[in-house]
Length: 277
View 1 (cartoon, rainbow, N blue to C red):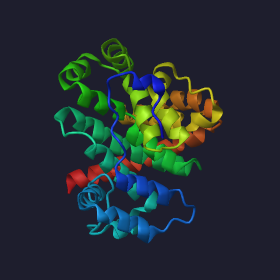
View 2 (view 1 turned 180 degrees about the vertical axis):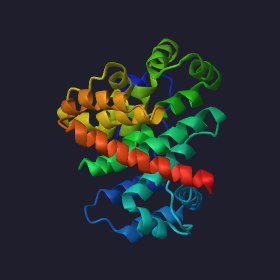
View 3 (view 1 turned 120 degrees about the horizontal axis):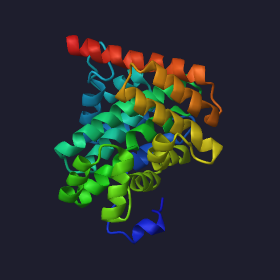
View 4 (view 1 turned 120 degrees about the vertical axis):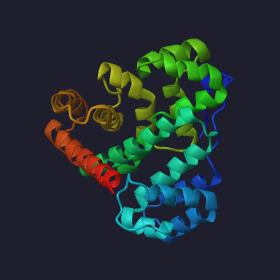
């Protein structure tokens, strides 16, 4: 997909989607996806397959036995989660490793997993939700690659993302939410995921969701999951958030809150068990 013409005038490069992910996207677009073909495609890229298996075997997924193949990972987790992990690893590989980016990737993995599973419980598009969570902060990686020293100082100076986007506009003429949405579009993500990435900073600051109704549910999950990750025990605040955001997205606040507590609680238990092992 093409990049927003306004961004073309800026001297900020957006990395191209790896060919393996282009091919995986085509397979995922088929309603009757060939699981063996998708697994085989991931395994043809040895570095990518190794990264996927490392992620699958991490404490985040809490699997009891060690997974030794992509096909086995699909059996345990399902194609959607394995595909999302593959996209996550492909996204990470598109940028040079840097200590400043590690917290971004760690948050992306947890946020994507939570948003995808939460969407599944609410009968929403789980793939769109998972990918939106994964790519939410990818614009920061784009700007860090573009000007590491300058952007490093911005990351240190800003305490919140709404402060960061102001610094980004002043320094680069563009903010990470717009760049992240452009990367999502160029990598072929769906409109709901793109909209969530584009609007997540504003939605979090104002608690107002995008104008188009179809774009609102995934963005609502983004705001809720972000708050849960910051303070999972703040039930009163999460309840207030759910009561504010869910009606805008035509969702039941009580069902949203219950799904978030259930999904988030399972993730917390999994991580606690892994830490104790």
